[in-house]
Amino acid sequence: MTDKPKEKKFTKKLLHKYRLVILNEDTFEERFAIKLTRLNVFVIVALSSILLVVGTILLISFTSLREYIPGYSSTALKKQATELNYKTDSLQQVISMNERYYSSIKSVLTGDVSTVVFNRDSLIKAENLDANGINLNPSKEDSLLREKVDKEDKYNLFETAISASNFVLFPPANGTISEDYNIKDKHYAIDIVVAKDTPVKATADGTVIFAEWTTETGYVAIIEHRNDLISVYKHNASLTKQQGDLVKAGEVIAIAGNTGALTTGPHLHFELWSKGYPINPNNFIDFK
Image (cartoon, rainbow, N blue to C red; front, side, top):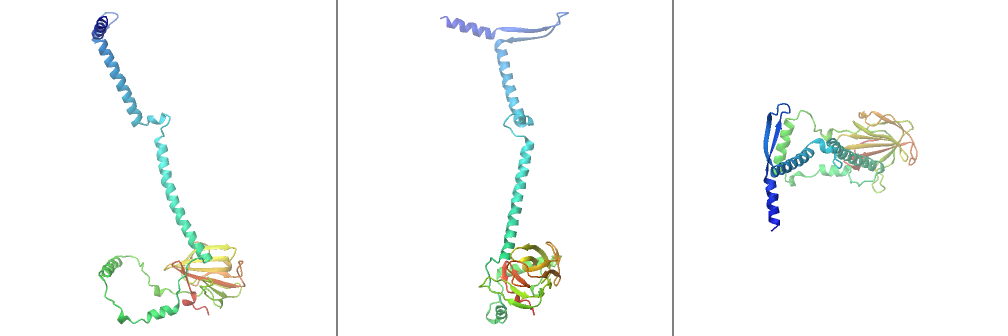
């Protein structure tokens, strides 16, 4: 029985009305007045606190103020990290391309590649084949491809297709061949006996992609030509061209000598590579 009067008294206190008045101290003029209860004051304070907390959270979450809270990273730092990530990915791609490039150059220098039998007799035999027994009627896919190529060539402003038959190789040096091209012994080159200080010439137009000293083969020059052809010149006494130089067919690129651990006397070690495979230079060049 005593609890109910206390509850009624507490409820009455919450709902008891008060008047908040603002007076002019000199004239006692009433400037502002408002009626309040304790319940109203509690509700207003609670709502104000909730709105203040929610506003603070929104302000920190969607503005740059969150950078000043421990544990949050700055926007500039995130942007820099993203840019560095893109740059790292680009550098990895460049490094991967360079590694493949140097690997192919290393294979050319060491001769550690698979070979393809390619000689003059096979070309002559293919040239003498009887075309009467061959079906020369183009298929549907072939016709569509020919039409597409014709359209591309019609509107092409540059002469990008060059006939391989017009590609003539110039002898880098003339002399007696001391060791011929031999696939079984992995000698993918011909050794030409020449006098010391004989000029070594480029076999065709191209770009020097390697011109350095090596322990086993002395001064080495490698030239990249059209039609995926690469020529290699080893055991030179000196080089007259540097990496990146453009050379013409017959232009002097080195001076023949007797350098490197694998040399047996003044000579030129000459190699030809087509699309990554070694080919016999005798099939295309007359060295006499």
